[in-house]
Amino acid sequence: MALLREAPAASLAMDFCGLSFASPIVLLSGCVGFGEEYTRVEGFSNRDCGAVVLKGTTLAARLGNRPHRVYETSMGMLNAIGLQNPGAEHVVAHILPTLDFEETRFIANVSGSTIDEYVNVVRRFDDSAIDAMEINISCPNVKEGGVQFGNYPDMSARVVAACRAATRKPLITKLSPNQTDIRENARLCIEAGSNALSVINTVMGMAIDSKTRRPIIGNTQGGLSGPAIKPIALLKVHQVYDIAKHHDVPIIGQGGITTATDALEFIIAGASAVGIGTSLFYDPHTCIKINAGIAKYLAEHGLKQIKDLVGTLDVANAGLAH
Image (cartoon, rainbow, N blue to C red; front, side, top):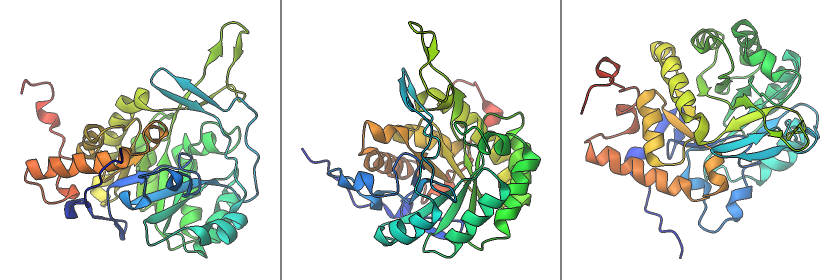
């Protein structure tokens, strides 16, 4: 039976960094390839989301890590793809022209091993149809670059500042949960020119085969995503919102969102938009269901638009009975 899709409620439309989003849902980098994979699934449409973040792209093509690169956990998934991609020039010249920019917004995910590489990738995307760029400074499954850049606030800010000087397009900085003070990182990235923040990237983890006593992931460690990291992600969004709200910088909240209730919790914690990733692997129609659930909640609570709910967490009365 085909899943019925209701017309998107007007209240779901929103502005994000000057870009019009049809929905608060953002499809996360690494989970939807270069934007066309899920369009082959019956009933799926990119029109059900506000934006699609393309696969992490480096200056030169990368083969990625050795296998195994994906491992399912009890409440999520470990991945260590290692930024396999065909390189920025190929993406701009051959992939972007195949995307339907009338369907949704498309955001490039910029990755690199050096600041110069980040800048060169940003410059290539600046001269393209891409709507915005997400700076991936927090990739936990690449041995050089990602983790080092993302876990040190000063280094994060240097990357952002260099990228900011290379483009006028909106920049979204993806923050790592694997750091001491995510608030300080957020503050410095905003001061360096980030227009928005993506909170959070995956949490570092590993899996072991007890029979062989070897790591299951070929890279030894990988990024954990899925419902297991939701409580961590909610806290990080709340912490970053404490900083971002003073600068009018929006947040894409992400980490284990599978239902409309999950999405609503992230919005209440301070996210203006919500990222969907791992849940798409077992339910490609997640976006339709989440959109309907958010619209229903807004109507039931007399809220006209998403922004009326952002950051409304009542911390003062935490733990009190309903």
